[in-house]
Image (tube, rainbow, N blue to C red; front, side, top):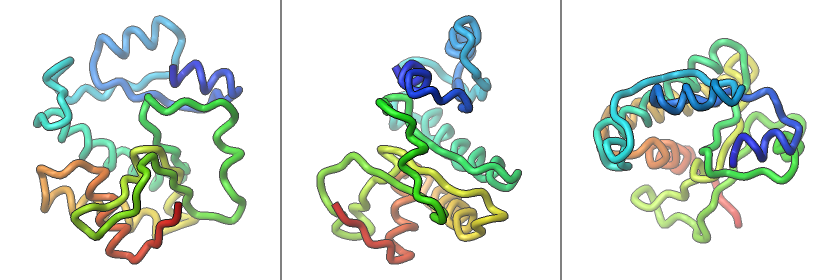
Length: 168
């Protein structure tokens, strides 16, 4: 669905990260740009509270940071996000980041942060916006200190600490 929605929106400059060999083979067979980043485990072994899934959450932030340090801005979205139009039209010129979320409530504090990554986010590369990379570095540090926490939790906890105000 995600790939189809991107193609219908005429967006072809994307990279899909496959977390297992069968998925990567499927994408490659169907001419979808895919990078294999096998972290171990398939199917139920990748349940959202499994060790393999938590490894994915760490790799995701590390990969984004490496790409941004390489001079490329990133748009992170889960594959269950669907776009009816080119999502890049959403970005405002001059902004260093854009974040959306799919929760109907505002956070009540660090223990209940709003999950902006549950929708998607875009960040300008490190050279143009060092603060974006500082945020991802702080997120990764939070993950190391709280290994049972999902990367979305760590990301939002760091936003909350920085005093980012959310509005609906």
